[in-house]
Length: 250
Image (cartoon, rainbow, N blue to C red; front, side, top):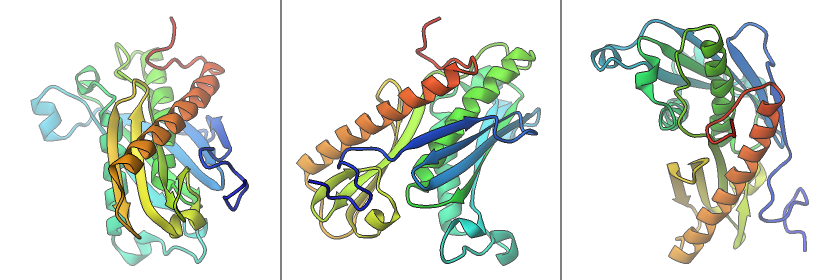
């Protein structure tokens, strides 16, 4: 029986499309499509690091996130025009940065900062999780180029990373909710999970009712299944442009 408004099974991801090198000018870039949520992630680097990183002889990695005004309906006001970032934007870009740093050895990036920009060009739910995945893809491509040109001696990535949402909607446990499902969810959870199966970021909110331990356990397994599938698609795409991820055979 089809329960979901787009015809998917409860544990089925939205269709994923990954377009590497989508923008010409950055060190690396990707267009990541997950259903009707589309994110452009781009990576740049320089030799300026924050004081705390310099004192520890480490590099640094940070992220920025934004919704294009036309990515939503109704239109989202441009934050530069308003004069400040919303609390949601600040929260999400911190989540992206923390998630990426969890799979990076900053010591291998001494005296280097890497910047990851995530711009949502179309939003239909799951923009923060799609941005984390897109950011990781662009980062993997970027560090490969930095190694190729001799700016990095070795790859600082120690694991792969993907993120996914799941939740409870009308008593059904669902993977990868779109906006309409998310809007009526009784529970909404977001997970960033490494290729080795470690949980980097976990966010959860019960909106309609409390979540039981058994439900949480099933949702964790559902999220693990989803990120495993996403990373499989990521590896397939990166293999076509000769970019290896941690865990790939030599």
